[in-house]
Image (cartoon, rainbow, N blue to C red):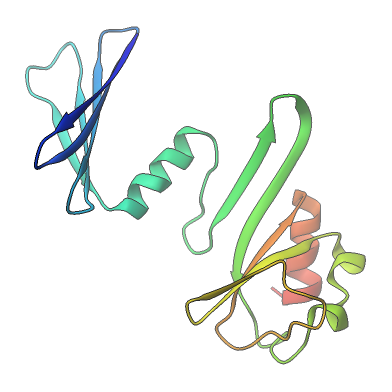
Length: 161
């Protein structure tokens, strides 16, 4: 199984992986921001080529590492190899009318659900570890962390979904 990187002058950078089955996978990061994925199996003469946006490439990378995304809202499950029984979910949500105008402290999120708000995105600005007095506004995107049961409780108790 081999790996190599090649600088493509004027084009971008190429990373090649040869699998144990002698199949080849290449990822080309083009200067224009696009990413191309080439797959050449030992049975085929021509590679299959897929053009990806940076967002699509990140999603595929996350799938390959086990951080699966859902279609409407993004969710990542993190499993630690040293702590086999620990699984943490990080999930994004658009705030619901139920919490617009309320702050984190007032909603008592951690006590009610065990989940924690770790970030809020508002009109292109990110607030990391928002303070208890942070008031939610319409169209805010929130990032919540917790175990699966805590995330489910957050959805039901706080968001009302």
